[in-house]
Amino acid sequence: MKPRSKRLVLVGGGVALLVAAVALVLNAFQQNLVFFHTPTEVVAGKAPSGKTFRIGGLVETGSIRREADGITVRFAVTDTAKTIPVSYRGTLPDLFKEGKGAVVQGRLEADGTFRATEVLAKHDENYMPPEAAHAVEQAHKAGATVAQ
Image 1 (tube, rainbow, N blue to C red):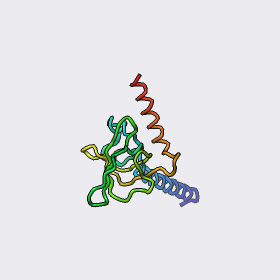
Image 2: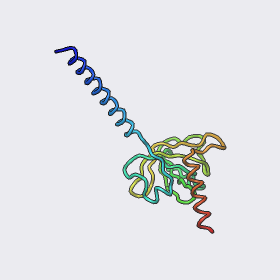
Image 3: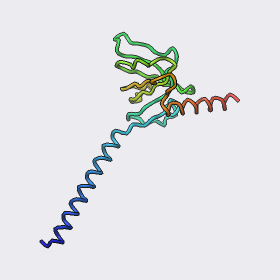
Image 4: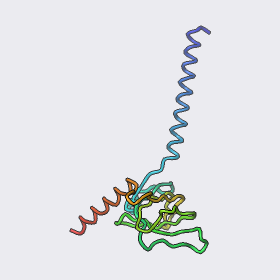
């Protein structure tokens, strides 16, 4: 084989390896991508069915109920316009409270309950995830428009 042919084979092999590596990275990224939706979007059917996603908003006051097993907790997340019931099995963060911001990750069940696998709570008095803050702001604007 001529030196020029050897170089072409090596360059072609290197490009093929690079393309394969990029394809694997993009595939892994796509599988781990989790989208954020508001309760209003979920009720409107804009959330993916059968896939993991996040819901953010406020924990509805008076909605936290602990099951007899001591591990399962039921509560509701609202953006002040719509409310989604959530069921979570596990330990809640210390800062998780009614009326405070939270983001839950999981899947929407056929009965409309959001089965959470992870619960994230705000970290101080002024913090709310940007997506949840935007959702609450949009819901307030929509409510003000309807009230007029």
